[in-house]
Length: 73
Image 1 (cartoon, rainbow, N blue to C red):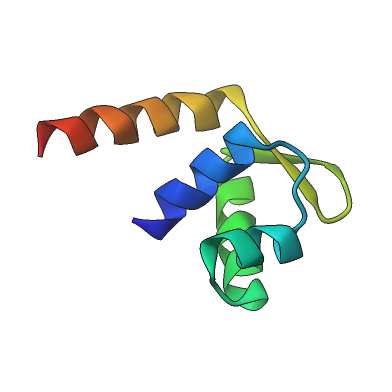
Image 2: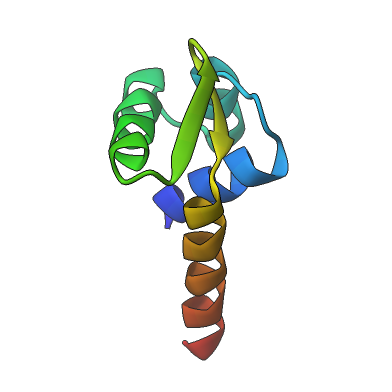
């Protein structure tokens, strides 16, 4: 589940740029930007500066829910 991994990465290492995220997750930068854009619309991540992202409280709650569901499987 790469979107969950992306959210976890943003939560674990705040202020990563999309280029740094793409290198860590071995994904295309455009894909990272698209997913992060969707996460912004859902208010899971915030943009304190251009191209830099941090997880929101809602994002933290979503990440916890992902972990709970992952353990249930």
